[in-house]
Length: 218
Image (cartoon, rainbow, N blue to C red; front, side, top):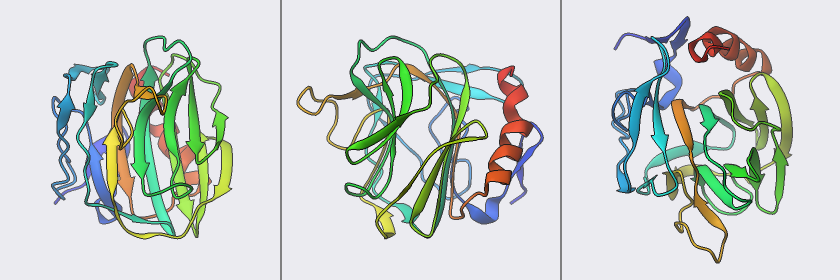
């Protein structure tokens, strides 16, 4: 299979577990057939630029659990472009839930109209509200480093894990949106989600951001 390009960035298929372009569907474009499906609601697809498509998820839309996503805490990267759209009145709204168990993997959430990383009972704001931003979680040897654009915003230890994720879902957590847990679907636009079985270095995170930011008019 030939490499795919996102603007000037070449997707490295050798390391790619899944690649979601949101190109009018939730299919995995890596060739690994890890396609997602909706549990409820509908996704509105649109074009941000020649190179960037996105899916708009509202607060009534989330995907079914995907139970076969590989994960290795020794070397792993999740990278997504995201833009918050609506207000959430302070509730926790989950954008992406790569869930094993507590303290294995961070979630990306919207809370009090900002985008946050959260793991177990700890969390950190990325200080972003309603602009397109690139969010990257790079895990190397059980240490997760979280970036917004090319800037590191958080680093912490995660438990060792090398298996398939029991739960992987977009726009809500594995136990669905319930007031008891305060987890609701978010209101925002998702674009270019790449999952890799390697840890991106800080330089690679910066290079990717700089090569693709013009796709989002940055």
